[in-house]
Image (tube, helix red, strand yellow):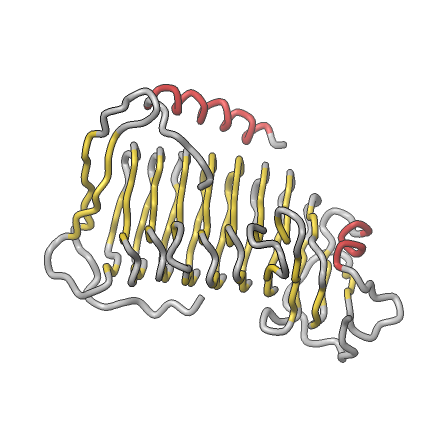
Length: 303
C-alpha cells in the first residue's frame, strides 16, 4: 500500500473520532477476428478468440500478466470470479457481448491492493443472491469504466481506497449502486444507476478530501445520494429521478450541491434534508443543505 494511503487512513480515523462517530455499515469463447483495439499498454494477453496461445479463462491470463500489461478479453461468456492484484488493464471487447458471470463467492470481480483499469464488461450474478459485482479494496488510481453491472447486492463497492475514477458504467437492478467506505479523491461521473428500490444509488461513508459526484443518472433507489460522515463532497449536475428519497446526509460537512435535476423542473432552491448525530450522540439534530440553482431540465446522461 502506498505511503500516502497509509497516512490518509490515520487522518481519516482522527477525523472520525473528532466528529463524533456515526454508525457505518456498508449497508466458451467465440472464434472471432481480432477487432480494432482501444489504446492499451504493455504486452497483450488474449482471452477467448481463435488464437493458438489465447487463454480460455480470464484469471489464468491475469495470473500470467506482468505489471503494466493488458489482458484483452474477446466477446464470450466467462463463468468465473476474478481477482486483480497487479497494475494491469483488463479490457473486454464489447460490454454488450463480453460477460463475466459469477456465483457462490462474495464478489464477481475483486481488485485489491493495486492500481488497475477494468472496463467494457457485463458483470452479472449467476446464483448467489447476495454476491457483489465489483469490489475494490486498499487501492489507488483505479479506473472502472464502460461496464454493465446487473442484479448484484452492491454494484460497485469501494473500501479504504483513494484517487479512483468510476465513469460511464450502467448499474441495473442492484440493491445498492456505488458505495464508498473510507475513501478519498474519488470521482463518480457519467454513470447510470437504476436500482431495485432498496438501497442507495450512490453512497459515501467516512469519506474525506474532495470527492465528486457529477453527471450521473440515479433512478429507482431508496435514497438517490446518501452522504454519511463525509467532508468536502461536490454533488453537481446529476439527474435524481423516482427515488423514494432523492438525497440525505448524516454528519457530513462542507458539501456542495450544485445544479442537480430533482425529478422535476424547479424555480426555487432545493432543500436537502440531513442530520447530525451518531453512536455517541443519541439525539439526532436536524440539518439542511441547499442546491441553490437546481436544473430546470434533466441532463443527457447515457451511462
